[in-house]
Image 1 (cartoon, helix red, strand yellow):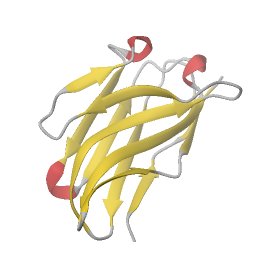
Image 2 (image 1 turned 60 degrees about the vertical axis):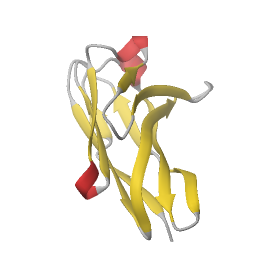
Image 3 (image 1 turned 180 degrees about the vertical axis):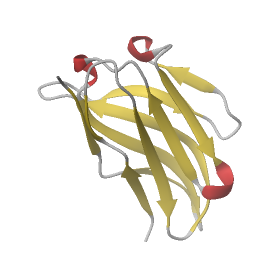
Length: 119
């Protein structure tokens, strides 16, 4: 069974940093494009950052200059480094990826990890 397992969320003070990881497991050949999304209470899920397998990156305007997305193709793992965190960054963060599996490409979501920015 294919899974995307996220880790690294938690509570941090404004101005602090957190790093998230998203590891793919199961019978996959590779990760194609992957992205990080977030959903705050009462709001729609939004794209935070995305990265292709070749390394092309895109960020939401609200996180440019503060967040960094990266990936390790050999480990089938993606990362989101979040610096200078603000209270408005508080949300559940989800990993999403296009996975190359036997039979083709499937889109998969992680279970989500809570990030809370508060003093």
